[in-house]
Length: 157
Image (cartoon, rainbow, N blue to C red):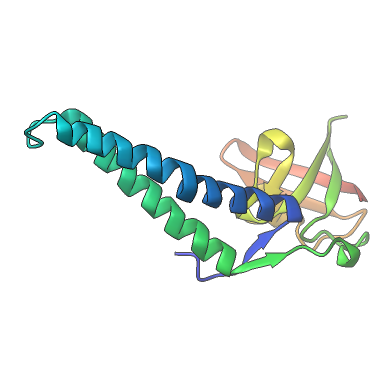
């Protein structure tokens, strides 16, 4: 699933490592205790608590595998190498929507840690993909489900 490179900031790497540690040390034990309790109720063939706990256990184990693969393929963004001329991983970009006064500011991160509510967008998102590799002063066209938008890159921080 994650045989491709996973680009992360130092904070993104830390969050994934913390989530993995929590799942392995806390959540596994909690679910194992739930399963043990459900088994103690007797017949598990009609035990919804047991089924629910087993499903949660499967989800946790799947997430652990995913996180381990992501961390094995992680490449950290080196902020000393982030260009102020061309948009790339780690760039904080100020955009102006052409035809309006609206300005947007985003940081380009890998898809593993994108969070639009925190102004972190993936290079694989429509806006991130359109501006990736573009220079200050450049204009880009972004095709989104809501329509086509045009932006000018005002600044790269």
